Amino acid sequence: MHDAERSAGEYDAMATEYAADNAANGFNAFYERPATIALLGDVEGLRVLEAGCGSGMLTAWLADHGALVTAFDVSPAMLEIARAKLGDRARLLVADLGRALTFAKDASFDLVVASLVLHYVRDWGGVLREFARVLRPDGHVVVSTHHPAMDWQLHAKDDYFAVRQITETWSKGSGHFEVTFWRRPLTAMSEDIADAGLVIERLVEPAPLPELAELDPAAYEVLVSAPRFLFLRLARSRAAGRPPGPVRAAPGVPAGPARAR
Image (tube, rainbow, N blue to C red; front, side, top):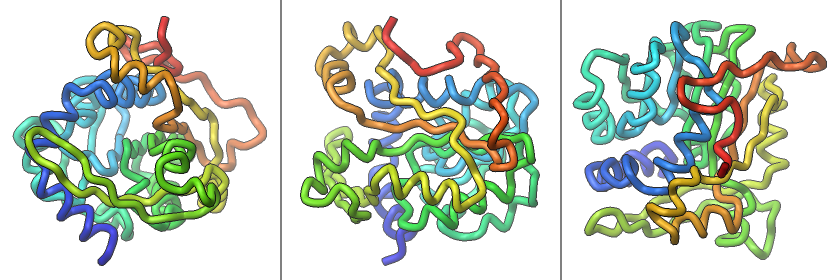
């Protein structure tokens, strides 16, 4: 089964439960989204492509902060939730991340963001080349994904360097759902990034927001005890060899990793 077909089916099956959980749980609301937003910086007036927008939580933040957003997801059910949330504040499309983004012209976006989506695709190379194609010369790509050490500890202790398909059972709401993704080592990630003509400006392993320690102590302990997600800010490779420009801080968010203070 093709990655996109599998992911669409899995997320359609748990769309309502996943959207409700994603809005408030410690891993997303107090860890992943704040760290991604910190790397995005000030998005006002920017043309933003969001890959794998899901139920539209980050999409709504982008639109609320003045971005001109085109967002897509492979799951029609997740996009219906996003449309109900966003109305006409963003252009929302059903599209497969693993195929050419035919709706996007060359050099048409200032910023591409892929929040917790690349691990659902076996071939990072093709995806990243498409991101580079649609990116303006001075634009950036912001990615969050499974940390290679997390999936190595859980699923690949016999071979850290394996690129391996994994299926887990997730509990969301009152249901249990199978979710399939790919784990890969950091070396494979960095090679695909370089081959796509991109360079890593920032690599961040954030801590959760400090208020999570009181709201959900168990989740806070998990998130500070071992790396869970990896965050990257990428630029076109022609910028290699010169220092990157400063990240404009997003309103209310420090320009850097979401660290406990």
